[in-house]
Image (cartoon, rainbow, N blue to C red):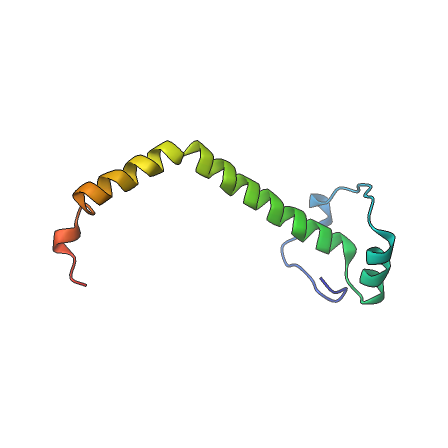
Length: 85
């Protein structure tokens, strides 16, 4: 996230200017240390979005996962008897 850090494949066309309210002290400390605030916020938001997608996927598929785990516990894995390790 330092100013000299470049993310390959990112173009300005993919970015949108926005207004954020940030803690003044933390913002000043970040700038003082050469942290690219936009990239840091973008990376953190990207991480949060990924986590939320994963959480929702698990919720949406909880019934299937539970059923699959129950079946594999009762019947073992489908090709388990041919496993060589």
